[in-house]
Amino acid sequence: MICSPGDQVILMDQKSKKDFNLEDLDISSLDEDLHLDLERADHFLGHLTRLELERLIHQSGLMRSIKRAGYQDLELGVELLSPQDHRFWIQTVQGEKIYFIRLKARHYKMSGQLGARKLLSIDWVETRNIHSARAPGFPGQQKPGLGFAVMMAQKRMLAALVAAIHADGGVTVPEYFHDAIMFKNIFHFRFVNPVKAALFADLQDLMPAIRLRELSHAIHAGRVIDMVDNTVFQWSYGEMVLLNTEEDSQLVFDADFVRLVATNRVPGRFQYVS
Image (cartoon, rainbow, N blue to C red; front, side):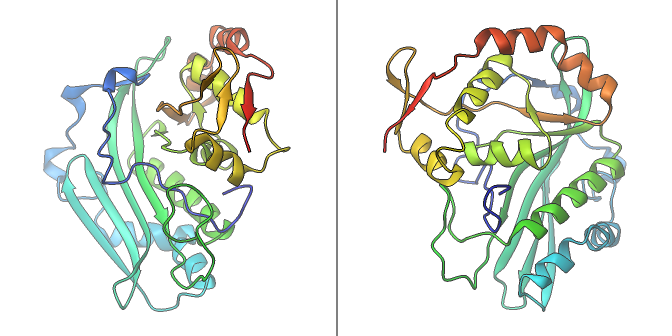
């Protein structure tokens, strides 16, 4: 996490299986474009051989940063379970996974004037410091994470993957508030729905008086009140995107988007219950 190095991020675990209504999401995938190039179905994300993927991971510094976190003998595992479920992990020689990521490449119909764009979808990413005696600090964690250096190496690795598969950017659906903060602060992702962007900004008004770790726990434990209707705030899913070019970004996050965010902002909207 940007505010607390050493913590992991879990986006969509296998237990949840995206058990929310797809109509609630803000951008839509184009079903006819979900398949990878059939001639390269045995390539990671339709483009990379295992050797090319391994080289990309090493060049990003991800493996090196994990070793510096105290793990020397590491193995890389890769699985292509379906065109929409490509994953790799880094584990110890004893088979204990300390880094895991699940990805897919899809074409998405974007809002505004942009039309469809190919995006790298980050469905689940987890780092686990299995040697740490500390209790996990954030909701959804089983173990503390591997630190800020690993997070930055992951940023380089994801940028390299976007370039390698000729994508126009990335998309993710953060399962927790602290995940959204990390994707905003480190990766510069933004919510594409202006109402959700406004709610997210209103929640951040509670910081820094309340630290990220405590605020995330409070949100997901029902200890944040929406004073607009005096109800317990419920975190809702929504896509965050990062687009490669300023031109594309301006078409999505245009003047109308900025106006709608400002219109939906409510200063002092949320109350924290200790």
